[in-house]
Length: 103
Image (cartoon, rainbow, N blue to C red; front, side, top):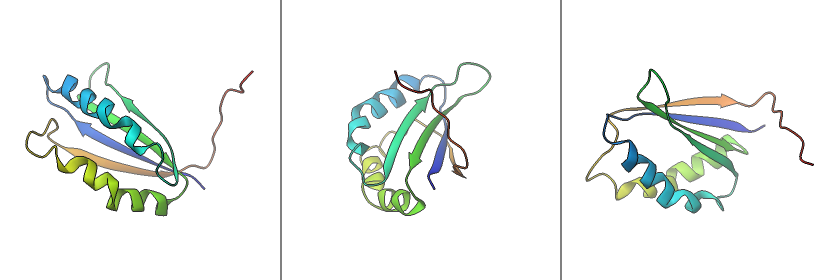
């Protein structure tokens, strides 16, 4: 069963472009990670200052392996100038998944 991890990142006004730039710069680095199914960076549009990073994984073990390895390393160089002032990880099991069929 797939798992979903949503990182809710509180981004102060003025740091949005830098957060998006950092994600764009490292977006390809996760694609070949074993067990990784995909991610989306969601920008708030109204009434909230949190970005959401929605990721799907084949298993909890795949997520934990990435988180302890290259996931941790991806953030190591960014500690000098943080663009967020808080984050919370939301965790889910996927119990139903529906996609629009391709042509």
